Length: 107
Length: 121
Image 1 (cartoon, each protein chain N blue to C red):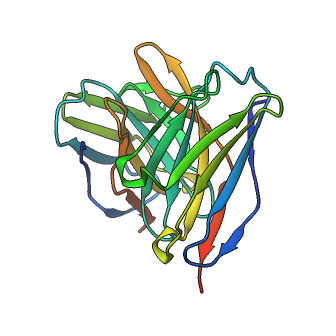
Image 2: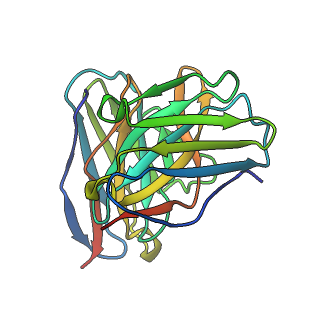
């Protein structure tokens, strides 16, 4: 199975900050990577697919980059509604696997 | 609008089975694969498997092989996930999610609201 490792596991940031989350795959996955946002008690929400393609309706403050094994999710200017847990997920091969999550909290 | 509506919360005893349903609406059912993902309370997301509603073919995570069965009913536009031999570690929220394909990419674009399954004696 492909292991997905996110860092950091949590971070504290202020409104307006630029935030970057990294995700590393244990083997090459090209750009077969997605990012999700999850708020407490809610289902995950799709943000990005193909490492850098924004899902329809997702604001442009979210951006993704990377390929092969190293990926990043950036939020350009953190807003109150962005405080949540973020997950990366690979779909290069079965079983699809998720990172352990990065919790973004208010400083 | 696309919706996946799941069945309600369940409480089961260890060793029992549970079946969770996921009813689709707002789109043509058969072209879109459905995945099942679970989340133990306070923990991350875990992929369980996938079903092709067109022909019923499945692919399960090895961890659940032999304990899980995913089926579909095209007449009611519903997908089912049955998990057997439940143990306390199966206490989790179970989600169904629709896969969209924009070749070569595949991603989970719509999710059900989740079904909490509690396993307790």
